[in-house]
Length: 386
Image 1 (cartoon, rainbow, N blue to C red):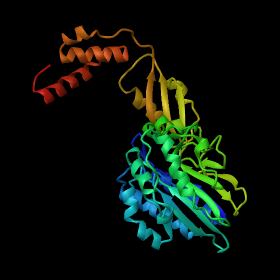
Image 2 (cartoon, helix red, strand yellow; image 1 turned 90 degrees about the horizontal axis):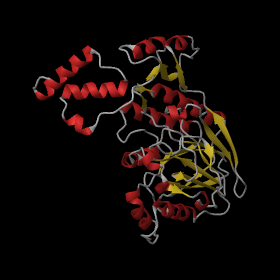
Image 3 (spheres, one colour; image 1 turned 180 degrees about the horizontal axis):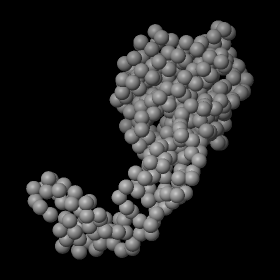
Image 4 (cartoon, rainbow, N blue to C red; image 1 turned 90 degrees about the vertical axis):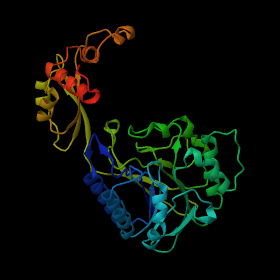
């Protein structure tokens, strides 16, 4: 069988107010083309399909069209939600998706109740068993263990308990079939991409690589945006990574999908296929004159550090005139030292506090027009003149 492993689409995610739906749609079209050209038997979509719990209609259109496109490319499709996804939304379309040939496992389930999915290769010669574990929130772990028939151990932390679910899902694997595990989990030691939610990649959630089951021939993971093999895992295990460079922390990463060729009882052969869709992200710095001389691709989004003598009205606008794709502009200059003492602050009027804050933050007095605007806003809010 040939399996395509993808995930972390984050459809609907913006980057500093820039919508990126056209980019992710192009990347998904590229994934579908790979599935068709490579004659894939099964596509695993390992979570964080959407970026928000309540995605827009346009984001849903892109996702559902892509899932149908992957199925029409010739193979089965299996989807698990991630921590960004609303599992109940996936549960609502589960039966409808089945009619379209797309398998969804919205919640942790016992192997005999949908947690172990069987799919057949396109030629009908090979059967794969996929143990599927979507994201398990900490508050739901005990319920998931009880559902799986595991005895609760209140002394064990999340990262120690979760592997028990993975092992329980893989336990019924049958000889003569391809064995796969698809999960949206965080494995300790993995290098994060830069755009993940910090709350879900800390030590609390970090399961040990050695705690992953050894019975799957391949472990397909979602959650971490940097594409990588899981170090110290006892069987081939990979994070496919995100489809796009989602954040400037991912600006140096090349994105792609994973192809796995595997037969029952034999080691899996793993390769990666790069994606070219989506804007690149880049950091640049310099004076206005130096920025004007930069050779920058017109499709690249920029994070700019402007070296200057000090703040001045309109500086950021000048940078954006030179570099229209500058999403962030930060000024770099020598700042005055010193902070306002708390006791002194209590004796100052709101206008004086604002002036002291601005001076301390920017190293120069606030512009008169800015001070007048502050006075107007203060009067609007409090009804009192400054």
